[in-house]
Length: 137
Length: 409
Ligand SMILES: Cc1ncc(COP(=O)(O)O)c(C=O)c1O
Image (cartoon, rainbow over all chains, first blue to last red; front, side):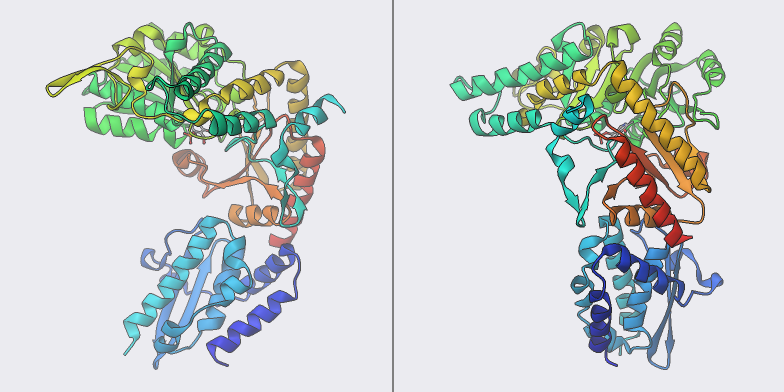
């Protein structure tokens, strides 16, 4: 599946929910399935700034594909990261850097999050892009 | 219509919908919703009296000036200030504290080795300006601790005052986290005994307590209009006239001068000496209806009503389990409750409450040292009530919180 196809799948999934409580319920479920970053990687450099909750995001280069793991002390945040990771997991840096990420607006995530959380979301995306940039050819 | 339904009906914003649900607004300590009378006058000031004040000869300017000074009169009466001139308009509590801190530092009223005494429970607005003044002057800050129930440690206060060197004591009337009414008149008397000046941060106090600055006898009392039912950008600095006279101005500009030459300036008289530049003249007049509204909320009927809702919330939060309240209940508790929920992050709870239409505050609440260093938490949740809230909303909040906790734990 391409990044765009994964995004479309997420948009479809979210469109099944009318009420934001149901969307959050789903995010909480996704949050509990997040691939958790190894405890020794929870260093200050991997801590994302600008979130109301603490978020760590790690990446490794596995033969040219970027493998992500993360953690947060807030479960909805974990759900949001897990969406991002689903889109970006094991992609090449080039794929990551060219992704438009329309799904975030399409599922209404940015508009419905508190501004601090929305900023946090932007910071997470920037961090993933920064990892991609550092490994781009 | 009952007494309280009538109050509520005066505040149009309360009938808003949030995410398709009825708004339950429980973040009043951050900013209050406004009665229609305030909104109408604000409109009228913009439509019919939009001209710069104190400056021009023309009719509109005269009308704008009159409205502005009406606002000042209303505030002076509301806090029983000895004169209109000792009420200075600023942009908010934060600006008022910065004004006093900067003016004291410049005026040599704070110097190397002097002590500024604060409580552990101050809002950043009544903390950071003093840290900045201390950096600039070489003064030192000492903190009066609060006990585990959130009350000020009066024994430690006495000891710190007795140690000497205290030039200024700055204290919240009511902490925005703990919601405990500090005994400010008693504290002021103690500080005056050792020759210290006293600044009271009344951002929360002005909302819940009857304030008589002459009875309290504090040297400064500061607050923000947006928490007492008017619009933002309408802060107040009250100061004793003789002390404001002695204090040098902090900001220079138009309106604050008597004469200016290329060689220098002389400052004008109070209160304009501290009101450099164009103030928020579109809004200040709305203090008149806002404080009329506040007046209508004084008295025992409202006190009892608020206490009833506060007690209800204490009981229900207690029953939920795993909710820990900071600032315990009592006769000195304002209707403002901060708590943590074990096993559920405050940001998640606030998000799930919002999805159910309930607005509360979450996070560090501009009191980071109190929350992290004193109480060892990464953040808290806060519900704060106004008299236009009602018991059904308190119930809705508890139900919504229960639901959020069930999803998160
Ligand atoms: C106790 C206290 N002090 C100071 C402030 C700061 O008020 P403002 O942001 O209006 O200047 C607040 C409000 O958030 C407060 O609750």
